Image (cartoon, rainbow, N blue to C red):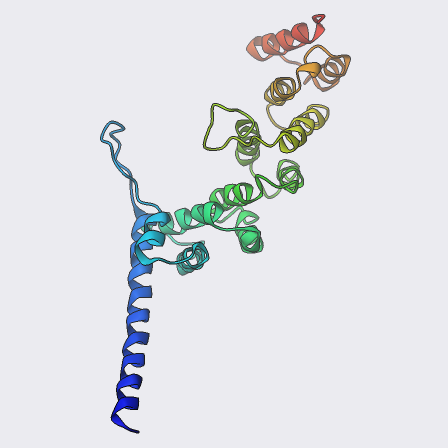
Amino acid sequence: MNMKAISFFAAAVAGSFAFCDNTGERLRELENICAYEPCDDLDAGEIVPTPDDIIRKYHVATNDVVLDLWTLATRYSPHETNDNKRAVRDIAVMFIGHYGDTNDFVRLSSIMTNRFDYAQESALFAGFSILEPSPALIPFVRGIVTNECVFSSGLRESIYVRLLDICSERYTDMYIGDPAQQARIAAFFVERAAIETDLDYLFIDRCAYTLNPWYRHSQQRRDNLARLRPPGLTGKPAELYDAAQADAAQEE
């Protein structure tokens, strides 16, 4: 091998080691971002680091960052007991929802359907974020709110709240301006207002008429409220339900 070839080979080997070192450094910085604890002082003007910093600093593609996030998410076990390591995995899963796509959905599903995994909620909302602009969002949400075995009542209620929030312009970072998607969500709440019995029914009822003004004083709403009223209501719950039924009975 001549000197020119040797020099080229040495440069290539050095470059490969530099790449490995760069990857390791990038992963360490990303883990620090996932472990970052924001300051409690809201007036401090703190700039919270995100994976965008990694993309800009290392000039890598979004998909590279997603792969790194999966490396962190799988580095620590669903049974991890160390709080700092749990936080890294939990936040890495959450970030996948912001930077990933439908190709990540299967892996997220294995986490979100494990109610003993501390990252379940993050995986659930990561999947939600990925599907937000898609017609597949409603079947996804329906599968959650109807599955009491896998998802706690708290998670199912949170999904309803998130669904309502993305239809509200005041939540500018979540709002979806797509009329077709908003129509799907509005119709879904009317669907659930006719059958939901396990969770806070009056919240579902309010979502249904908020997104569907025609529903508020409709016979359909009056029938739903009468049919689904829990037996034996007393005190404040009874007062609230009475108020909803009185509201539904008003004429336009």
